[in-house]
Length: 342
Image (cartoon, rainbow, N blue to C red; front, top):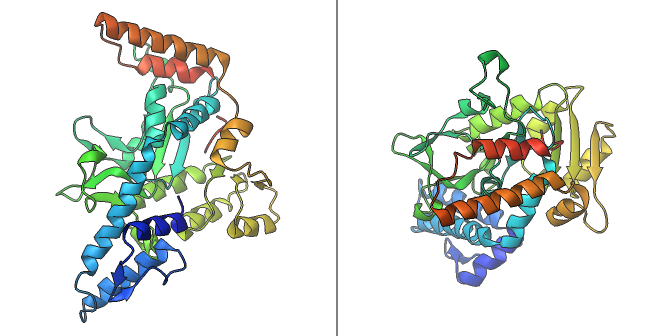
């Protein structure tokens, strides 16, 4: 749901919402981001002279509404299916370099899909009981078989690095100003570590953990022969655009964009042969169409292996047997079939 959809849904629930005594519904041309920007501005002015005594509560109300809509949207089985098929399609035989996924989404669809497929991935957090954000984890490698000699160690193939550039509904800031990953159901609205959509969100990226995530993204894009495939992004965030434009200074960098927007059209006008724009009248860039019509289907071997694994898991449950640690399954599954992302 975009800013217009969120704006309409918000005022269906709060039709009499006011800012500084003025009804807000018709003030922002259906743009919730613009409204949040005004709320933040009023909160700043309140530090000099009180304009709206309840402006902080109103800001919290809007943030809570956005978070609740994100969580409500995570229950779609059809969308979950798209994500699973997408990841099944992009793994490939013998790929050793990690597949990097950069997303501005707050939801957990990526994590849920990778977990259900048992594909190995890192989302920047380390630990098990207390999972704490550690940007150094993006530099670690998961090796394939420790029983081999150290000289024979090799990376687990088709390993994913997930960078949630704007935070997540499952991230909170702890009392030591660190960032932890927890069950989103137990998180209050104001605890969540998320960059909410406001005109000042660019400034938020200078803080941890966002600064670490953007630095990691930049390091990956500046590698030789990097290819960035972009989907569902209209190039409306300057802090992300800067990283992509900087990467274009590297002669071997390639950019493939699925989508259509004013900013994407400007990219096309550059006439740079390293930039490929893909769209069509039937909206091939919609995620459903990309999964169904563009990206490859999972290999028959992978589909069969996953079917057998699921049967084995259910049988083990019935018999009361413990499953293995999952690393071998994830490794073997991902081995079979990315050209995908950076």
